[in-house]
Length: 536
Image (cartoon, rainbow, N blue to C red; front, top):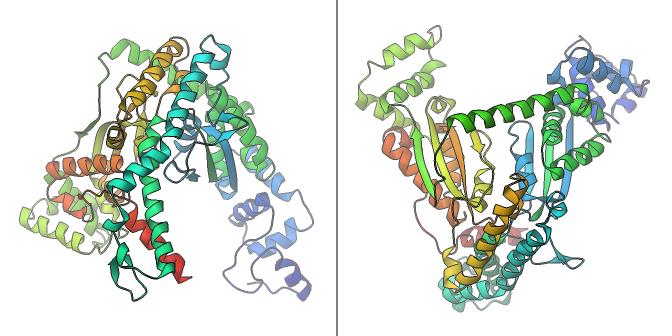
């Protein structure tokens, strides 16, 4: 480690967390310099702090110059992963936000929740949905606006009645809360004012979530939301190219806006998204789409499925998969032996012994955060799913898998929540769905992509998911926790049952799947949150 003068140390401590240790954080303010330092690090035997003093301190453009050379001249895309950008996007539709969240690698997202936030507020007298620019230039503009307004009106006026129904049907007296003495007691048995207020907060939050969960089905895909995006430069560059290539005006506009803002922080990393290189990529992406459309038109026929569906359509023989999984489990601990030889020997082990090995791996898991080892990635499953679009939005967050989806339509029927029926609002709910369907059909004839905006969350939506067992464990265990939305809990439970039927031995690793049904899903979770809040 180089020795620095006192003056150099003072300078370095403004840009690094320390000047004398082997481990340090890079805190220099400019993202482009952080990334360039990291990349330059691999091309010299100097320490990073020495590189900074020699090359970056006196040259404010050193970071940009480095990336111009490496990215544009050498085409080394991997260095673009060293720059990190954070962007908040407000007022985008549920169509556009899904396009952004389709990206799997290099991004983290946080999106406004339809469970905790209601969409009944107006801005300047208008409900929060996108007045889609292409539709607004057609003769169907008024019908589109009226359909969306009707959705929001029925959603808004039923929030309080839905809350009242849920609270009458499932009274606070049905639940227990922790009193000052640490004991769980019925609400009516609690006398302390602070505990009473705390209990009311828990119950009110859980019932509000239940009410909004039921009513979100009415919202159209044009509903405006907010999303925070954190990602590296390479991921942003690819995202921007995809948005620039889109046929939707909203997504084109978002691409320009996002790039403009990223130019203020990581300009060098996203420069190619719409230059000559980016335009070639955009052309390629559109060519793939058109080619696939032509193949589908000439080779595929059939009628759309109506209603919900969860079907395991592809998986291998269990014995074959178990052999691969066990071979992968012991591979690291078999030095000098190639996988092929291990597999040959594992095949000779008795099925009872193999079952015990899987159970041994299962017993080692003490909670759902103890993920199975990568060996379980050797088993794969492909599902055909048709669920309501609102539920799809939750499953869409899982990115360590293959997910392909179709355009959002009204062709697969809709899903009416039981609470809507219980409240007696079937007639107006169906009116919304019919209205949306009629407008959708009119717009779809010439603008199939734009027609998506009028489709409600209640409408069923087809997509396919391919995942390995390791990811299936994570997703299914997470999506069956008691506080989860009842729609995706049911689907995740069916996925588990399908895997369990196909692979009864291997599926034992899915140790923390919750198959129970809960009336007030968020209750226990809200209790834990409140307890943590009170400890502070």
